[in-house]
Image 1: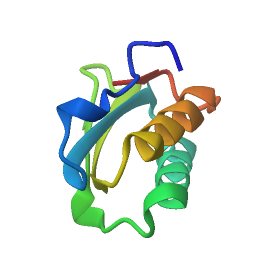
Image 2: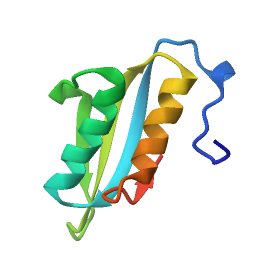
Image 3: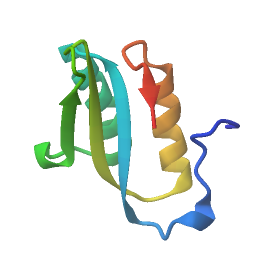
Length: 92
């Protein structure tokens, strides 16, 4: 993976608390899709792990999902799947 979201293994002591920020148009499919992708790699998310903020005009929404990351490979897979989702506009 040669993009800016590639995670350097040396920067983290796995396992660690890790925030994933995802943005897209405000629709229920975005939340459902994000959760399904992340849960595929981490297990069930608790609602307290997810926060959201709508844009000033309410058309877009950003989600921050805090996970316990276990490896660089896990994070790379999550980012790749999120980037491939038609519901997701940006992943940070």
